[in-house]
Image (cartoon, rainbow, N blue to C red; front, side):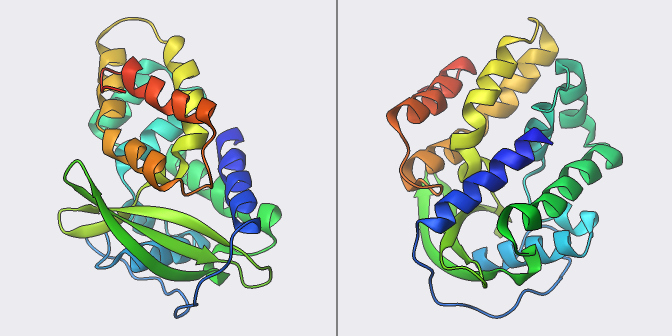
Length: 230
């Protein structure tokens, strides 16, 4: 999947240019009702669940609407995305997305997800939404990547839009431009608009490294496109 490859390339590039932090304990698979008790545990559990092919556990550790919107970039129609936003992601689509991520990661990084070292970093708030930046270090190679998690109903979930906003903003704008006017497209735009705090977190914390002015403009332009300010 093209999007997954882009996300992983971004992880590798930022990790190659950043100094690693202190390691924490090895990841373990723990399925919870929704989210994790701490930011670092959310990332550890996500990696371990993916490595163990436990898609059900993955669902509890991410924000579903964000996964829907990322799946949309692989060529879904407005009606298909609106249906997923309303009724949930079909099992086959979700398995394909996460399996592709899990299988592509070792080829892109030389390491397995469950082998990564996770250390918690700083917490911050944007528009009354609580976030935390979590540092993720490779074991075999120097460097660290950064993931952002969001607090949802008192628990922590990995925020894909806050982490990968610089990568997905332009593809989302291009995809939106192809959608016909109508209620399904408005539903899609509303779902993107709800990600405003996450996209602002990407701009503020720049987890993939310094954001170039053109990329920042694409993120703000996406917000304008969906009526969520700039």
